[in-house]
Structures are given as structure tokens and as C-alpha cells.
Length: 506
Ligand code: NAP
Image (cartoon, rainbow, N blue to C red; front, side, top):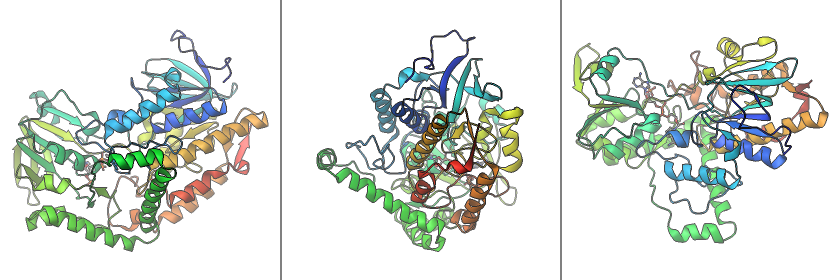
């Protein structure tokens, strides 16, 4: 690392801080990028909006929060952990893993905490990114890497009367902003949403509350998943017997790729999953009316397939009521629903949990990015939809990289695998600039368009387009701007080499 460009974190706020590469965010993406740049001797600084590392795994502390991809796969390939306590680890253990990685690579000293990036512009003459935080600090860098991801801006739907509800002194919060100061014990709790977060929250809190109202707009496909602790002997074997941990990781990887094959190439095969999902309902829920309410009418995989052995047990608990009528409004006492005939019912609630997901397809609006000539990327993406070359670089935007950018999220396997592919690609791009002795690189519009035409073509036959549901994978025009279109090894192949022919250098 060269001292000349290393970040001076002690500089007074009004003095811009210079570094070679600015990374936004310190979740899996930001930390992984930092480690790769450190390995290659490239200067960097991480701008982190919060006061701790971890991203998703710092923010989501709701009861029962766990990863729905097995930990031996949902971890860095270069930082294996033999002693994961569960196959699908809970949030504290994943956050602890990331804290350990941060400490091992000494990354903390390169992180500027409380640095919430809100705008960045490219200076044409200087060929540098000028990045500004909400509190007015300025950072200048040759390369800008966004590791912010797409699931970090909580979505709280607007409901009439919500202010009256809050004014009455009752509590409401989003699943990703769980308010641990609110005691839910013995309370009437409403959970809105039945997605990945809700299905973990419901079984975890049901025994503590007096009443659990679960507001379901669309049921999810929930597959059985026994998540017992991994026996100590097995953990020891992972640590000591060569090849065992790698074999476990490979096994997990290929099982998930099989599901990916069905989702992307043969959606009809997902009917097998639906049988499992229906069995999962039957074994816990005896009431046929409730079973029908819980059974999705779309192809499994169209929305994220969820896994739980405890969700339906939580639903079968006498304290739980599944409410499928539309939420009409909030009142000072609770929530009013309206049935298909317009008949209204008010239910009192002390606490409301919004397990309503995130702003995804518009998450890029979180930072105002202006490229050469002041071109506004947010405006362009609002007009054209979000797209990038290989989901990472953007035509007309020099030296700008997105990790988990457009069409690189997954419905079937570990995003950490995608992140690592992107990190390697971005690092190779930075090295190419260095090698050529130039200041910047920009993907050509032709390369980006050709790549995305093929990708959108591939997406046409996938379960996300044909499965008969409306998911957050699709933008307001029904175009999938979120998910990768194939198997993850195909993405690995697509990013393995950095093709200079797809770029202009300047
Ligand atoms: P989500 O899966 O998008 O679920 C949001 C839920 O809220 C859906 O049931 C949705 O209904 C409902 N909803 C949204 N707006 C509503 C409204 N106005 N009225 C009534 N219901 C409304 O969100 P999430 O559970 O936070 O998960 C988001 C993503 O984060 C997941 O897909 C996954 O990628 C990730 N995640 C992963 C894990 C894990 O690894 N275990 C855990 C949590 C989250 P509709 O279906 O009808 O839209």
C-alpha cells in the first residue's frame, strides 16, 4: 500500500480525504472488496453509514433472524469456518464471523464510520470521483465501488391513519429495525407480511405474545428445514479432516444449483417442491380453511422459496390469526381490514411489525451519482431501467463498480459466491487501468446492451417471469432487473476474465 494515497482519517472534515478506491458499505461485499484490494496493494477506504460493520447482518436483529442458505456456503471461500453451530446459522453468529474477518485483516482502520454517502460526481478534468457524505465530508478517489447491495432500505407501506396509531403511544417498526426496547411479552402484536423475515419472526415470538395477528397478502412456499445444531464431532471433522469442509461446501453448492436449474430452465420441475411445501403445511395445520389460505396459487420459486420447520407450527398456535383481508387503514387502536364485500373489521394491536421487505428495484436512488458531463445515473436508470455490464460496470460511468448490482442477486444459492466473482472482476479492471498507465476505464454501450439483451432473453423462460406471481424481483414494468438469469457457475464464467475489448480506456 502506498502511503501517498492512503486515507488520512484524522483530517478535519472540511479537507477532502484522498484515496485510490472508495468502497461504500462494510457488509460481505465491502469487506470482501477491501480484502482483495489489500492483497493487491491498492489503497482503499470504506465509507460505512453506521457505527459498526456487517450490513444486513448488523441491521437485521429480529427474533429468529437466520440465513436461509447454509453457512458453509454463505461465507467467504477464502475464510472457511469449521465450527458453524448450525447448518443455517443465526444472525449473531454470522455477524460474529464478519467481525472476526474484519479483525483478522485489520480492516477497521480503513473504515470511516458514520459516513453516509449521499452523492458522488466524476470530475472530468481531474478524472476522480468526488464523494460526499450526509454530514458534508468529501472524499476523492480514482475508483468507486458500491457494496451497498439492494436490501438495505426498509419498505414501510403508507397506510391511512398510521400517524394516529403512533400518536396513541403504540409501537411500530420494520423487521430490519427491530426495536428491542419494546417489550412484546403479553402484547397484541400484528405482523404485516409473510416473506423471508416474517416466517422467522412468527414462530420465535408467538409463545411470548398474547395475540399474534399475521396479515398475509400472498402466501409463500415454505419448504421443510430441520435446523438442528451441527454435532461437535462433525465440527471437529470439518476442522481436522482434510477435504471434509470443502466437500460439504461443494455438496451444498450443487444441491442449490439443481434448484437453480429448475428455476431458470425447467420451471415445471418445481412442482416437486410444491408437493413438499404442501406436506409442510399439512403436517402442522389441521384446519382445511387455514390450509387453503396458506397454499400459494403460483409456481414455487416465482417468489423466493422459504424454508422452515417451525413457521406453520407458529401459525397453528391458538394465539395466531392469519388475516387475508386487505388492510384498509390504521386507527389509534389498531388495524382495520376490509373483506371483498367491503365489510370492515378493526383489531386492536399494541405493536406492529412491518415485515414488508425493502426498496429493491429503486434502491439505487440512495445515492445521487453524476458521471462525465454531469450525466445523472439515477435519471438514466429511472428512464431506462437499471442495467450494467455483467451487473458490475456501467456505460458512460468511468471507474464505477457495483457489487450485487443489476441482475446479480439470486433466488437459489449464496450471494457471497456472486460477490466474490464481482470482487475479482473489479480488481482485475482496476489492475488493467494500472497496467495501461491510464486514468480510467468505461464499458462501451454496445457491450452493455449486448450483454443485457442476452440476459433478458434468458430470463424470459424462468420461473420469475412465467410462475404467475408478482415479486420484488420485477420492476414496475414487469422487467426482472434483480436476478441473475442462470446458474451461478455461468456467472463465474462470465466474470472470470476481464475483457478489455468491452471497455474504452482514457
Ligand atoms: P419480502 O420477502 O419481500 O416479504 C415482504 C412481505 O410483505 C410479503 O409477504 C409482501 O406481500 C408483504 N407486503 C409488502 N407490502 C405490503 C402491503 N402494503 N400490505 C400487505 N403486505 C405487504 O421481505 P423480507 O421478508 O424482508 O425479505 C426480503 C428479502 O431479504 C428476501 O427475499 C431475502 O432475499 C432476504 N432475506 C433473507 C433472509 C434469510 O436469509 N433468512 C431473511 C430475511 C430476508 P406480497 O408477497 O403480496 O408482496
